[in-house]
Image (cartoon, rainbow, N blue to C red; front, side):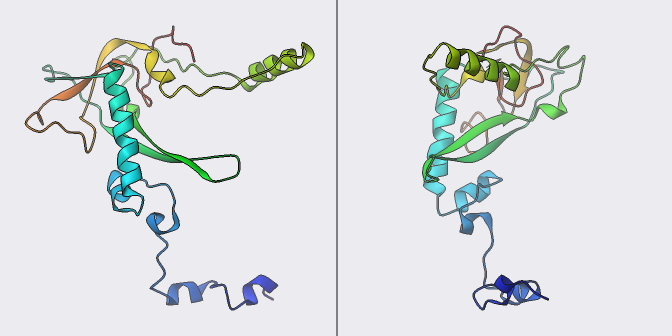
Length: 195
């Protein structure tokens, strides 16, 4: 026996869903976060995603995270990827569109590309302790969002990534980006990094 909501004429269920080929359930049509740059730039929100990518790239360049260089002989170059997120307000309305450049650090080899890993992150128990102390002392607690905190860590090794999709410098396609500071997705960061 089918649940009552499945009997409604306003829903397509099971095989009925596949009979309606005109239904577009792609990420672009339902306002989901795109998985690729191509998907983002084909979506109805293409301008918003392009602006988000430009803001991220400008931030990386302004903060001295990337530097265009010729790849030294015998060095590997890591790939990278754009990750897209829609940030929401507490009332579920859209606050902003966010694009983040992420290194594909999973291809890094231990003892070749890095010797130790470190990820600065607060444990939930630490956050709870701070909130409990603030509550006991009747203190106000404020939250802040720093867009590029992760990028403050310096790197001990030379790491090179491909130029980001949509930001390959014309006439300089043969160059790669040397990372001067940490980037999301890397296996290592300076242990002194504070988040």
